Length: 114
Image 1 (spheres, rainbow, N blue to C red):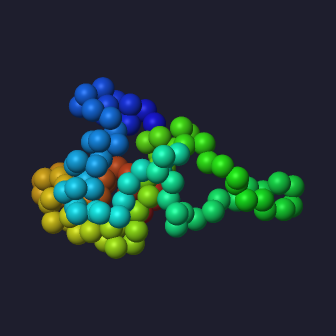
Image 2 (image 1 turned 30 degrees about the vertical axis):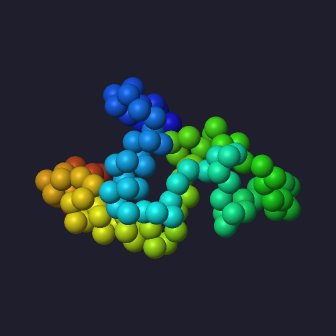
């Protein structure tokens, strides 16, 4: 949520507009968007919560709580388009992609892998 708010302050546009312009459109993700009361997703999975020893369906999602952390819907096909676009350098520079994929040696050591 905080990162979404920071992005809005830096760019001067809403998080949804930024993601739509810089990710969905660039990657041709035509079956992805944002869940809202005005735009419910007809094929959304149903959520459940555990009440004592019984699972109960969630009746209504609080959309506000999803901001920046889970209000996106997509399809498997669009996620594949995202992955291809990311790896082909359409979403970030090749330099940034290499840095993103490079193992952090300090982190690897912290995990006891070296």
